[in-house]
Length: 486
Image (cartoon, rainbow, N blue to C red; front, side, top):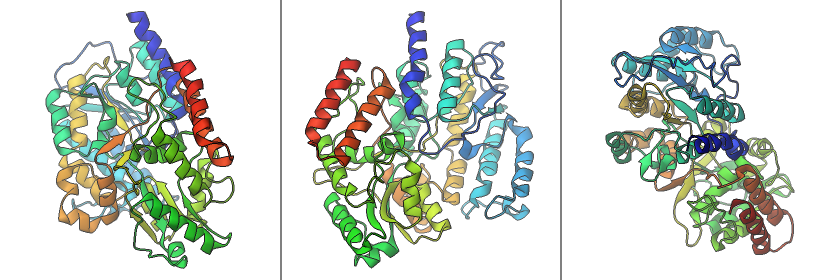
């Protein structure tokens, strides 16, 4: 059994590495001095501390809330001074920005400082010391976590995105206590925990997850004779709109739609359309379901959207090229995460934002994107204190801070569902609505995960870029994938 478990852990790197760096929630530049599996800085020699009081927990940073590496109490003033001194900040941070009243707008640049200040206060009230570490993001993070699991030298709280459901399925994470899990189910939007639910247990939580919404450039939409304030409600309406914008653009701008490159950036975005239409990537056993009727219909819709793009843009292997086209006002419609709202405002795009349109028989659904899930490993030494830290992440104070910053929506129902929040943050309320219902994470295939993903990505690209029969292309990809996974 021990050998089998270690083999499963070792496979994690191969199973998830191809999906790691997507959606943007983490910090891609880790601390090079932190090496998982023996040099992480985690002191594992003292045995398990089963009571939160008096514990020291080690917590992995992620970029959105990172304030540095070390004991949290020592980092905040350094972070404050670094923010004030940072000439690259736009707008610049000044001393006056470090005054915050809950319920009032907060400058995004100081969000990590206040987030960790609240966390520090809550942990100190329980006599818990927090030591922050940064193992990077994406491939670097997965490598270090895999080594840490193998060596049984792992922080008390780890963080990650697409790799985290796989860790839960392999038995590497501690399930949340039953009372905590029920509290989350009752009070928190599903996107924050649903992708980390496995066999009826919750294994991870994200304090500010992202899901995709539909954005559009109001100026381009208006020039095409469409109502810039009206969101398309169905796929047919969306297709009609992008076709009209493309026609009006006469080669200067296009209708757009969704990025569909053969990589994680594409799967995270057009995967939402698969979910809406009742399709998907894999079943609950990690077996591919590429050629389902619903998937064939969705890829056909993608092919029709592709005609409303400059040649090669929609399936470009570089996702940045696609999003740059929206920033440069070369495409009008875009399916993307919530950060698109503030980025559009900053560069002067008058944008609309709504939930993603539905297919004729579709139901609301989504895929998390840029979601930093926090979990407690089975081998953590201070599990109770670690869960106390995660509980604080969905506290009123932390979630009000997220709401006031306005970059992501709060996940706490008691804040999001108030008239005050909906009036102050109408775009983020739309994002909150999109976080409900059938929200999923990207699955992990039973074997050779990255290879199977590439098979599907290549099949979709072939469907978009050639005149081949879509059903036949997906059938072929399904057959090749099953030869590996079964």
